[in-house]
Image (tube, rainbow, N blue to C red; front, top):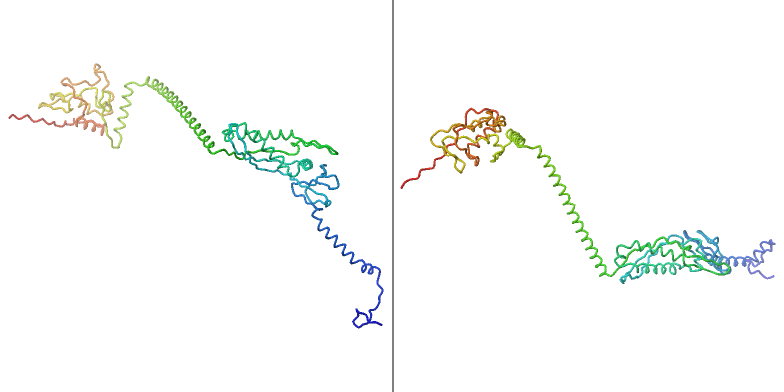
Length: 420
């Protein structure tokens, strides 16, 4: 009996009877493991092609390799989420959200100036038109449809305006016109197909165009400087027009003001008389004399000058045999004594009682009349020291009666010429 190779003691292992399950596992286990490994490998390799995730805001258009190509039925469009397809098919994604594209186009104005326009296009793709867009144009519909079409319309519209209009005033009008023309052209162009599933769809039903905005327009530097100088001169001329209009309005205002002043003077002059003005002057003089503040009084030299009216200015002062005052205003009396005339009486009269005496008629006997022995009147200006002291004494105590007249200042007699 031969020893068994797998036995430690050389004896063969004991023989036991096993079930059919164990016999099946022993027989097919290696094959099952191999098959599972192959299936797992295939699933790992084909999973990216069989499971497709549609992101937010997108839709998927299914293309069947063995089923007729693009599925045009809008009900077969895959929405957002995870979708399982056969690995040999493909799912193309299209963005349905609002898109914004900025492009730069070269254009020429109506006056032949070359310019560069920067345009911004805002649009959105319609959901039901995604299969048609995929079959007729493809995923790069933006490069093939939107940009060339908008660029051609931009050049066409800007060729209708001058460089100054494009640069300054007509920008909003250009934007609106480009948008309206784009919508009209998109509605005219059709996507057609004949066959099992024919269709005829306009581009306006596939793409919703919201705005065509003009971001900026670049002109040559010399043209820009010329336009700026022209605009500057225009506003300078407008400024001068405003100045002329302002001066015209000012002249009208002065004219109306002068007419009002004239009417005011005509109305007021009818109620103003000499006696009223003299009375108002007396009141003002009394208020000035009663004031405790230091003051300087200027004596008027006219007939109705104030406050000479308080000194009986209408009645000339009487002088004795002193003779007429010289041109200097200071009298040179002789050795005889002068008589006290009405001037001294007026100087002793209080200020409150002087309002009635000067304006009376001498023929009635109620007024003050000059003395019979008075000689020619003394000049009123310039004033002597005697007149100033008399007026200040009346101003200081107008209510106290004067007891005696103030002595006149002595006058200096010029020396007699010496005989040789």
